[in-house]
Length: 354
Image (tube, rainbow, N blue to C red):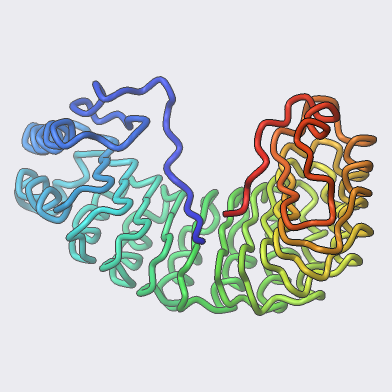
């Protein structure tokens, strides 16, 4: 299982936006995509702005970008006329570093999504950092196996003060060097996805105990399947007092003591995934239920040391109507959904971990 964060869009936007440069709520149909690229080319030729380029899932996004760049003409500084703010290439095909380099020259990018754009690597990040240091706020690199610490650390050093969202899920070549850079330079980050990264206790501590004050700004932290983290690292999470969303799925070394410290400090938690945290027992999970009354989602899937005591604690302490998702499959808990719904009237989802 991998996770990715998709571009935040205006729910009111529709496919009619394909020709206007606005971000649609869903990926464009082939016809709408063709119209969208044509509109971008027209804007490039006319010297007018085109703030949102959305090529999600395009089978040949590289050719589309080439057409837009050709419409801009020379010199390359013409790209600044586009005023491009959002670039979404999630799952787009035929995109290379060279394409990102050309678009990065606009110097106005705020949100860049290259999730699962497999041929993009360090050269693209270098260009984004060099040309958009004063604007970049969101970077999504889901399942990018080319990017290295060298390029990402360089980008964070230049852009970190403004970054609010960083999705590094599945970027297998990253190490604690990236974690250290995040802790040293990211003063406003709100959302951080470290799924499947090989950060150690040292790296996580540099993020959680940061001189930039990100402890106050970080709301969402994904540590799904981070195998090198241990008890000492997990205890550092307690420094992140404004967390509302925490994924610790598969944290084999998470203990009740560490979870209790997190619960005491992170009382604003609404989402907590503890699936397959096999060392955790009723002691730790009931502490969470008592200390975090606003829980909307709780998964303890596969945790055999969790019993009905957790349901009792949830029922006693959860804010009325808050809980909507509860995954207790594989636990020593009564699975009767009718009984659970009586206790938690807004409970509608019973499967979270798949």
